[in-house]
Image (cartoon, rainbow, N blue to C red):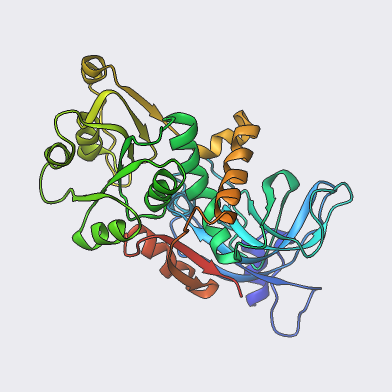
Length: 350
């Protein structure tokens, strides 16, 4: 009966295993069988790799806010159910397609996938894989793709941060916020003001390299920044909160300052008062890192290559907030949604 129910909910390629009914080799995956419902752990059957694809034994998978959105049908990309969420991972190559010459069986890799990484195995295109240097652990590497790929493009490619400039980072204790701080301070030699929603998060930000911190739940962010840097303001702001926090960050910019919008964790999207752009000759820009994969693959790939290189050189310190087992995937989602964890949330598949 269980097998019959499973086959009704999943396509034939997603055969489920029930007692006494083994169909070849299977692996476990977190499956979104219905939008806005908890994920279920299923045994699924692997498919053959195509000539340009690679099968990876997944060790760690990042848990991102976007994973929750896609499982609720609220993300820009909307895969058909059932599907396996998860867009970034680290692991070891199990099998390569006939046309693969960039990696081989046994190589340690990080990769990006189209929502299939929350599983013991995943298949992805060779263009979405990068080898991990020996000096970098699989757990550290799993933190790099989304958080550090975003941070590097936001600071280097969009804002073009220069040594000695001051960068204001909101949601600074989150996975991407900590990555932005890490790149700004340890790679670009900028000074960082960390803005976060609690004293505990501000304390973590200071421990991770910020020169100053501001709890933006305890008063005006703009006034707090002014007390720290004077009337001149900050050169760059990187905002992931939106709403009033974005507007306060915008008003904190110096002459010819730049603000980069990465997201809206606060739930509100602010209307941009363009007179503020004019008065100080400031620039407001957005960054949707994943879109570079299709629009400018070389820039996308360089962001990850740079993250690996900086990490290999010891210039970056990726921070893991929490690690959950695959069976705890719904708890991991709650951790991200409710902002219970600072730093990166990972699933461990081993």
